[in-house]
Image 1: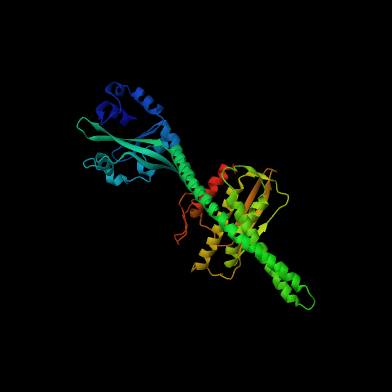
Image 2: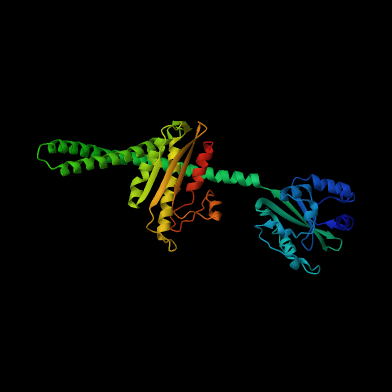
Length: 382
């Protein structure tokens, strides 16, 4: 602590560290530094740490002896300045840090503190301690932990994006009501005509293959009607239907009906394992179906990317998306959706829930799908 004592006795702060009466009392000075909740580090002109207060040791999760002598840039990242000890070793020329400080750049800037693999967001400020000849003796680094602020900002962005998504979904629902009506009427008439035709074909002598063609037509109409019914239910749900007891099997079936035609066109097989013994869950079916459709769309896009990838060899492998439902504790249901596309690297997995993050190269993906899905599930307590 000899250098800190020298700083107290022979130097004058550049701005606002404390008046001369406080600096005369070493123990009082240390007590003040130790009681400050923000991080305070004191480094020499070489950039090596000579003092750290209690908050700094707590944030960096280390002991004072392990910290002293280390260069400050070992712990700071995402900072607009980079410096190393060899650039700061000369006492006769301004260091890189001092040049930044003198230009007014290093004042309340956003950066990160590194502790192993963890990075804590902070606001950094740098100040100089000069002697009576205005020679820089020490650099005082203060850092304010802004983890909570960053979390609130992220939640606010997600809420704003979710609000925009719900508004668009509501507008789409209003448009689909008219579309469903326009399609339902001709389908009903077509079904009636086929019923009349089938009755006429029941007469003796009519080929069985003709009757089978009509039955196939009925199956197609039933599938179209199921899709339309899913669209109708999906569009009629509103945010006012906040929570209700819902059947997870039914929600999965509705979501599958919405994407079935698109998947069949791409030769993607959906294997949905239903469980009749699943408990009803308290949720908003609109939101759950939105999550399911988003996840299924991601699987579809993954297969598209796999098919267009030059490095993928087994293109004849069947494209399968599996949906399984697992009851948990009689009150919860886990929904597992998996596919046999290419998968994701570990560095991508860590970012998939970040707003606007996307690996798609076609530009059609906004990077908001999984972020919205996570926000929805979090809001339901999942």
